[in-house]
Image 1 (cartoon, rainbow, N blue to C red):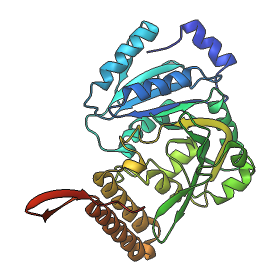
Image 2 (cartoon, rainbow, N blue to C red):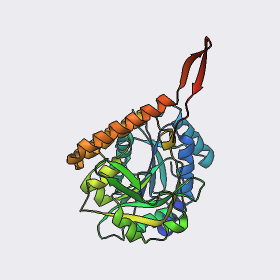
Image 3 (tube, one colour):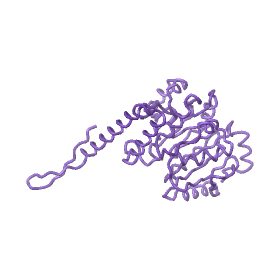
Image 4 (cartoon, rainbow, N blue to C red):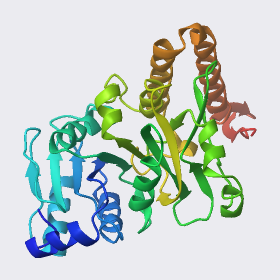
Length: 337
């Protein structure tokens, strides 16, 4: 589905199209409401993407139908559905690509990355579906990415949704001995986040945070697609690690993105499930095995320690039954912070 008439599309190419062809990829899984908000923020931008691909990762809640209904109500047209062999649609197109099964974040994004490479995109912007972008974000991302001598990956200044609290500046660093990441600028105010230059932040980056990461065409063609052995977590770290010494990591401080933490995975880090922790542990081990195998013993120990601590906290927070005067009562232990 093209969101513009032929005349509008031609005008956009001349007046408001990015200096390079950029495709945006939004991975949706049971989150059509967030996805719609993300797309609408992109369409309000001062610079429009060449293409927007929504990849539905085998949703079970009727997301494709909800997206189709939204598109019809918003534009009077149905959302065009494509397959992995589709030719490039007209500039300004919004299309839907359905995955037959949910094989994770990397596999879902790779479906669209293959298409955009075939369509001749100069850059691809991967967005979590639970983000909203500033009107100038796309232009700022492209400008910073291609200002680097070896354009590789670029990240944004990301805030928690509806707050002025920074989630991260572009990405972060990883402790090799635990394979745990620290987000740069986490919890900062805007003033503090802007107190350092982009170059100072870039010098510390090991990876670009996957909620908003732009990759150059040369990066994707040289490094390759994301490793699909990662179902969830650590994919962006692995991608950046695979390019060390060959490409630059960039921070577009003027590219503002708001992130509703947990919208794309169904939980926040404060309400993380045992299944998500298992996926995280598996991804940490894979990341370490690929890039820093000497750290495998300490990474495994840190995973065991974290699991034991979580099991203990859950144990002491459960109701405890005891007899008093022949009756059975329940008390709940306080979970110590």
